[in-house]
Amino acid sequence: KKIIILASGNGSNFESICKKIDKNVKIECLITNNPMAQVIQKAKKYQIKTHIIDSKSINKNEYKELLIKTLEKYSSIDLIVLAGYMKIIEKEIIEKYKNKIINIHPSLLPAFKGMNAIQKAYTYGVKYTGITIHYIDENIDEGTIIEQKVIKINYKENLEYLENKIHEIEHETYTKVIEKILKTM
Ligand code: GRF
Image (cartoon, rainbow, N blue to C red; front, side):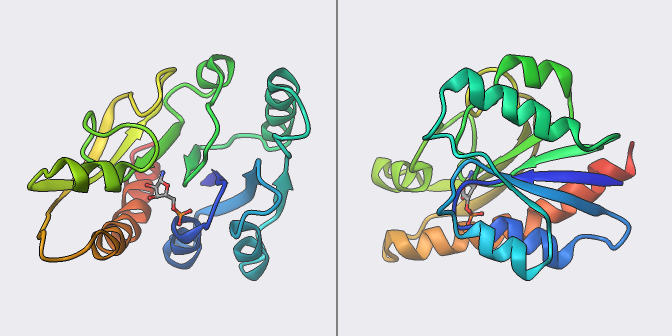
């Protein structure tokens, strides 16, 4: 099975997938829109080919075209995995890779969509939050939910503590879900 990972930032989920994924799954490449992203170093470490498409130096349409071209370099991709990818995936790409693009979000969707979801949940004061893995559609952080994990927030602990806990659970869960999807294909 073959997957491609898209990421824009730190890449802790990317790294956890590289470490844990079944040997029969090939990570074909990393695609990033951010030339400064830490995830690029991680890809080097795991010898994963990286494509950098600097989204700040081109317009939206040019970016989309380049992303499509880059994806097309790889044939018969089973799954496109978003791991902290901070760009919107255009409708054209979603339609082309229907039910083949998944995302991870650090809240119990549909609550706390968008950026800083962990902080939003913490400041709202919810008793429970968690993570969601879902197929993407044209709306940000929507689309069919594949898996969720719940965490009880202890407000004696600070936000940073909760963030670490959430990332830990993301790392525990994402690879397993990817493998499960690939198995049922
Ligand atoms: C994760 O919390 C993920 O849920 C969200 O972006 C963050 C990425 O973290 N979509 P990392 O780059 O994998 O460390």
